[in-house]
Length: 180
Length: 92
Image (cartoon, rainbow over all chains, first blue to last red; front, side, top):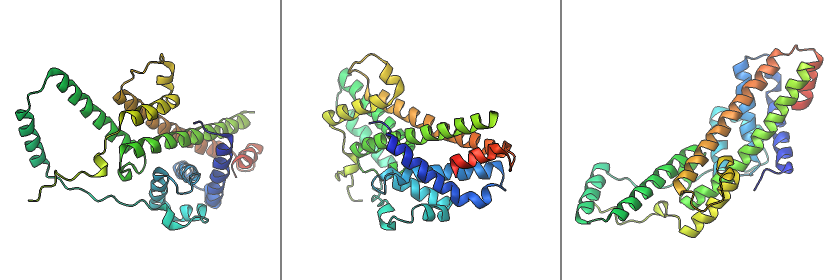
């Protein structure tokens, strides 16, 4: 699973499209505004490669739309809006103190061997790291189970690699062109 | 208060060992650091998850830096110069 050259080409095309939309204003704005335009276009371009089929890409599009609705609408004019929505999971409300107290009581009743302790600690650690991953991947909160989380992560990483590779090539080429 | 603890939602489904092994091996192919280590099956799940997080954040930072560089390149270029034309042709 690696970024393919067709992914690179498609990303570049979409990114260019996004920058074109900014074109009228891009010459007369501040450096930071221009950076924002570049970054937002790149993110929508990356997400649009998945055509609404992954959770992370839908979440990223939603996030970008909240910053620049016009840009997203223009770049994604071909895609139906319903396909881009992540369904919110029902929240299970747990009173933290009660849960913690009941867990303590349960633990007191069990006498655990040293090995059980180690296994329990390892499980806790994995749980914490998994939550960290949920925070790093867009739309992590919508991924209902850990298998889905890791599948989405794999796809997200490949897409990010595409984004970085193409952007780096463009920036290096532009820098070389200027220095000549 | 109703007993909510008895409800098992899919969000608490734990990964089965086989699924984890399969996905972890795929992650390892993507992560630069882990790929370089000796091929042993004993890389812990938490380590892989941590490395994955780190890698994702690193990629985020790279995108940010590249956006910075590009916007400054565009800034440093004279409107009507040849360099501007080069960049325009690359990007727009």
